[in-house]
Length: 234
Ligand SMILES: [Fe+2]
Image (cartoon, helix red, strand yellow):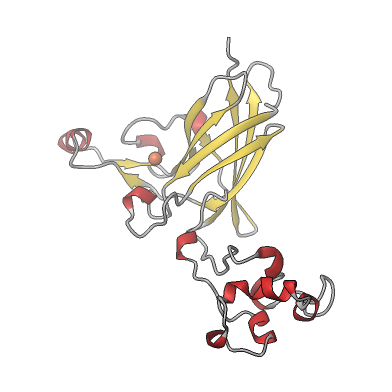
């Protein structure tokens, strides 16, 4: 996914090399700095401002490769989501046959590294850590962060009852998935991670052994894999 990204926090940059290629400081430009690449391309200045790929200088500082092709809507400086990077690989199979589902739509959403959903964090960009992707040939891969565990509201009826009987309100770390594909019944589920301290005592009892995915450290990146099995429509 990129299921993560605090895109709204990214700030437009006005100090890009093309601006200086015109002999101006950003504050002197008679047009928005974001249009510098368009202006350069319109007047054939792009080759001088931007060497062709493979030539010296093609990789501009900070990874800004070509403003004309990126255009003003391109925004740089997007901060990484805070948390432990996670690569999640999913397989989507037809349950009875085990064959890959050719095309599936995957909706997913999760809490951030400290257990807050975007709708619970006034500082989070809208739709943070939510994503939708198309899985082809029964596979998909997304890059996100490991979600944090969280407590269900303790002032609600369930929370108050749990407290009265001496039980905690924590839920184990998980990612929500909603998978749909033509010819199969929709699947809405949550995937948990092996080793989670709350997995055996999920406050709402939703964590089941069959919904637990491994979480392996592979050269500094946490990798998790899970196989979803869809039921054909009758
Ligand atoms: Fe959740």
